[in-house]
Length: 281
Ligand SMILES: [Zn+2]
Image (cartoon, rainbow, N blue to C red; front, top):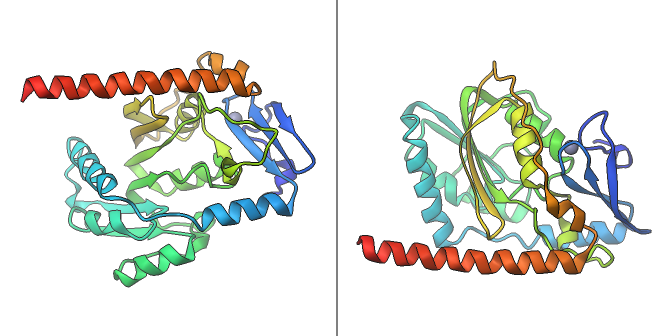
């Protein structure tokens, strides 16, 4: 395991302290804008443990969304000859769907309760040491709402993508934290997270791992979708955009106002989408 005390996001780059207390410290990486946590206490580990055990199985609409993701992927490749990994596969709901579309599907799930459920569905669930093991390699890697819980974001993402074959596809559905109203001075449920990936951090780390982004959507509800492809000869490194929100990360109230406004924009966006589909149909 990486010594958390020495954990830095991007090697040879500094960080800015957002908040520090006896128990923990939040930092933002100066290179990529990743916000990450260093924990010094058992109390915080307990928060993490409780949160980790509260994982739920995917809901119906999440399954429908997964099916539509596969449809998008099929624009790029006929999947029937490809191998598929669900990193953080929960109870195996997505793997069950994926089985019908891919040559071979496997999953990884650290939560014992969910892993058992997946195994009961006769799915192939790999060892928890998956990330540190050499191989196996896949044509498609899918991950959904996992990376905020993962230790050492940059290192884990690198290890995961190293398991992707050349020209393989990386499908990443997750949350980003460009406007997250967090009161760092109190321990709250989000302290179960090890990192808050921002837009910049996501795009930067994909680029240094040679993932070319084919499709990306960042929604106002904090979620995002990226479909990328591993291109070994890709040398282009994403250049960080100015993120004005970084000014507010240690200002809970300013963050809350931004979050409130983006929430409103999300509602308008959803309304317009409904409005549009009403007239098109
Ligand atoms: Zn970084």
